[in-house]
Image (cartoon, rainbow, N blue to C red; front, side):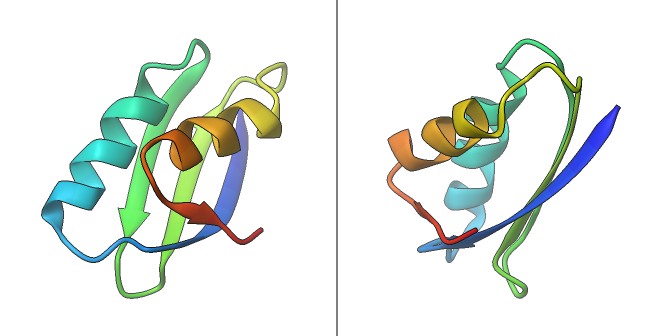
Length: 68
């Protein structure tokens, strides 16, 4: 498993946490998603073959900006 930490702007409440967690968790190869509102990060544990671009796209489709 690979652990990726992304800085995400625009998350502010529990709804944001659920939206991002549910969307990213649905991707094949994702084993865990942790959203930290204070740090504005999303940590994703995933199979190495899952591209970072797919994870970013899924978060951005929920209406949030992936900074890195």
